[in-house]
Amino acid sequence: MSTREKVLIGIIVLLLVVGTGSIAWLFLSGRARSNADVTVSPAPAQTSTTTQKTTDTTQTTTTDSVKSATPDVKLSLVPGFNLIAIPYILSPSDGKSVFYQLDSKEAYYIDSQGKWISLFDSGTVSPGSGYWVKATNAQSYTIPVATKAIPIDAPFTITLKKGWNAIGNPFPQDVVWNPVIKTSKGTTDFAKAVEAKIITVAYVSDPVTREYTTVNAKDTIKKFAGMLIQSGGDVDLILSP
Image (cartoon, rainbow, N blue to C red; front, side, top):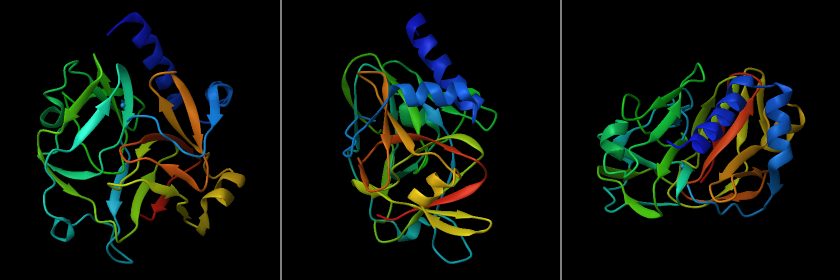
């Protein structure tokens, strides 16, 4: 990892650790640019708890309702770090098995303490979470494990923890970003949750410009796109396909 990349990662880690601090907010707001059609390619991130809601009382992902295995799932990576999501149930799902063919051998998630953890050492890859993946050169990376697409006929729930979370589009298709936010006091839509400062808008990272793009309600989220979002507490983000 070059010195420049270490500095970049250090800045992102600082953002995630600082949480509601002014440094994180100033950095993001200063480099963010609005774009109604998020098109950046997918790359390291923080693991959030993700579940497929199957009943009113249970939030679990069931493999028997998933479509048949999808061959040749490919990630389009640009040189450097890419913030990605993988909208498939993988088997095996450990990071080393998923990314062992990656030329850089660098793929990361951030744990609940805000520490960078290599997916080659620990951690699993699951739908709805975001990951930083480094590519030495532009490449189309084929996922080398069995894949099953997340169903597109039911909402998907992502649990946000207090502070910065790295999440991603959980569906194998582009989606309109308009999640329902569920707190201990009830539910509200995304725009109202942002206005009430329950959460912030989401951000995607452009691996070419090294800038963040804001993701607002009704924006389009591309397949494989990872995002950063800040939450004031533990809430559920429920996204429809």
